[in-house]
Length: 272
Image (cartoon, rainbow, N blue to C red; front, top):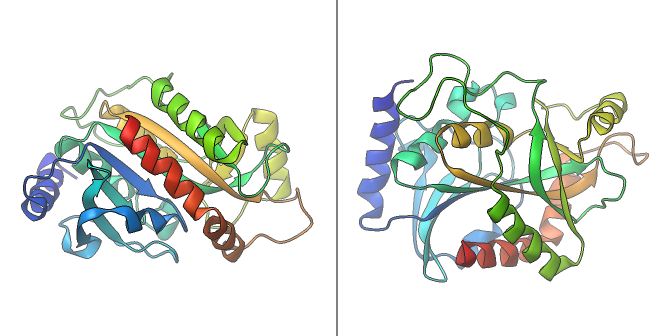
């Protein structure tokens, strides 16, 4: 893709939102779309109407861009994201991030539903992402570098902004009293990991595992954005409990904690 492709998408979105200038972009993970209830002056744009945007194919991902205000703060949210396992290239899956940068957005909050690897975690907990593992998948920056967004070899020593991460941690503690900070392992999916893979990831230092988030985080960091991330632990990872994993379990747990999640994000938006 070329700069003009991103610019065309940004121009289309701008034509629909008028003088609203979103301060932060939020990507909502599986089952976490409840935040949409609290938007004021809401504008919805279907992904299929935005030039260059792919379309969500996963249950629980509505496939629409939401622009409005939350407690007076202008916000843009993706209600549904794109994944490598859907058949998209990572360039396509992360297309929206560069569009958001062109819209003038410098803060990004990534959310996801993930499996707990750390044995101190339990379903329904929230984990602030402090770092990630992604060397089992190709890089979202593979191919010709787009100098307009960032350098060829961007540093990744601090992908997740410390100040934003501390705000998230304090808010999780406020609403749940079970806050966690940890390392998120990105796996390509769509099959869940094997017990052996989970044991290996634990040895490598991972606390949670999922099939999203890291490509978006890398591209956002390349663009110079402040990145923050939070995982909703919707299940314990493969082999920890004696049962087969399912997307239904993920959705069920996310549904149980969705209002806690909403309160955390609403307060976070007000504090950045």
